[in-house]
Length: 106
Image (cartoon, rainbow, N blue to C red):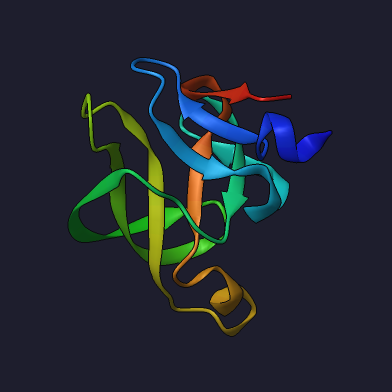
């Protein structure tokens, strides 16, 4: 039955563009600027801003803001570099804020 419906997706709340697959969720225990956020291994239909160093709850990271490629809504950020060894697993991963995405095909 799932093959008829298609994969479970997360979409941009603003324009409904597909931004991530449910299967790419690594963790739902992240904190964004506006509340809960999810860590994803991949994201799609996004563009990134310039790299910048930010002091986050888990230490210093180089990140880029992540925008919807269709409506340019800020959805979260991408970890480019983690300076602490225990945080290296985040490199190349995406944080999308729960308030900026919605479920589709659930």
